[in-house]
Length: 220
Image 1 (tube, one colour):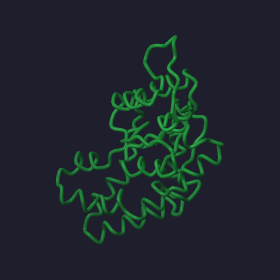
Image 2: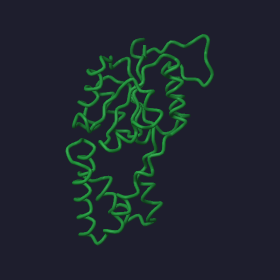
Image 3: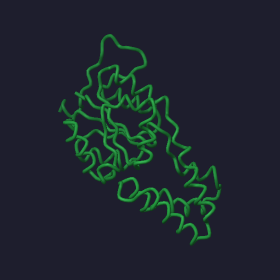
Image 4: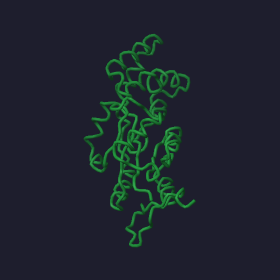
C-alpha cells in the first residue's frame, strides 16, 4: 500500500521556471543562456540551496561574474526580481488537501535555500505537510540518493510505500534508485491520472468505496 506522497516545492507546489522568467525579461536566447549560467544554473546557486553558501555571498559572486561580462544590470534584475515567480499553485494545494482527507501522509523534499524556505513556511499550505526535508538543512541536494534516504530515515517511512513528485526528470528518476516511486510533474491533471493509476484515491469527490492504494511491485 502507498501511504506517503512526497512533493518537491519549487516547480510543483509553487511556480519556479527560471527559463520562462529569463525569456519574459530579455527575449534573447544567447543572452538568456549566459545569464542562466551565471545565476540559476551556477555552482553558487546549487551551494546556496545546499546551505553551503549564504545568499549574500553567493549573490556577491554572481554579481562579480555579471560585471566581468558587462551584464551587471541584467544580473541585478534577476537577483532582485526572481522571488516574484514563486506563486503558490492552488491546484496542487487542492490536490494535497484531497490526499490528506483520504488519509495519506504528505511530505516535502526540496532543493531550497534558507531564505526561500522561511518564506514558504509562512504560506497557508505549509500546515498541510506532515514533515519534510530541505536541502539547505542537510547539505545535500537532489538527485543525490542520500537526501531521499534522509527523509525516509527521519520519518520512519517505507520506500515502497512512498511516491515522490518532482518537475525535474532526473530528481524523479533518482527516487526510483532508492525504491521510492518517482513521478515527473507536468501539470495537476496528468499527476492525478498517474496517482490514480497507482491506486491513489485523489478524486475531487469523496469516494464511499475507497480504492486501496497498492504498490504494483507488491502484486508480483
